[in-house]
Length: 295
Image 1 (spheres, rainbow, N blue to C red):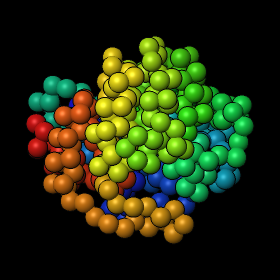
Image 2: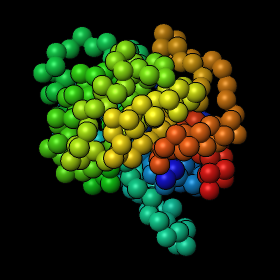
Image 3: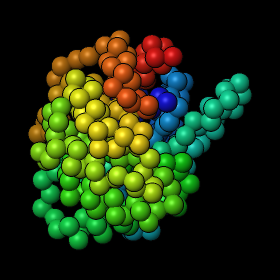
């Protein structure tokens, strides 16, 4: 199955300003139509699964713009509704499509809400109990949102993986967990990926584990390592474009073409992935290239 690409990448391409702490989640309040358009662009490109604009959404984040906990929860539910609306409009225009694309509730790591780059290091100044409470309140909202799957994305920390494994066992919605990685064998905090992935062995609510927001050249080895400890689970891979992000000035350097990414997707499939797509700096043109090559 083909995942979408970076929602924020497409929103910026459409002209949206997502430079604040809430990133694309800010548009849930200011410009929800832009989110529907960005989601539709990925569906038109061939995506089978599209994610909500909620990666950085949280009560804490929305409190920074003066919203109450109830208002924050409403916007998080809206993120899933907007994705569903885009999906339903796409199906109305394409009645010939037999497969109904899935709606994933995007749930980023704790560090994503800090907007300080710690989502790529896992270096949080927070206790395990506080981390548990932060994720518990968000998961409660998204578990009841009607999403087809919960997408726990860009997880950089083994402590966060352990917390999520515990919390997801109490959810009703199936989930995937994907790690951000520093090289071909370690997640971002330096833990071997086998150690972090092992928390989801025989997990009742997690049928898929993999990597995202990671340089694409590291993906094949990472997938093989995950498969060794979780041979019964589906593998997924949606890395970034291969460009380098500088959190200090919020800029990217380097470039990778859609064709390069499409060729790389064949390598991820050969390494065992069943769900592939893109993350940061991969837009609809990258997903379309993947669709044309792997199908």
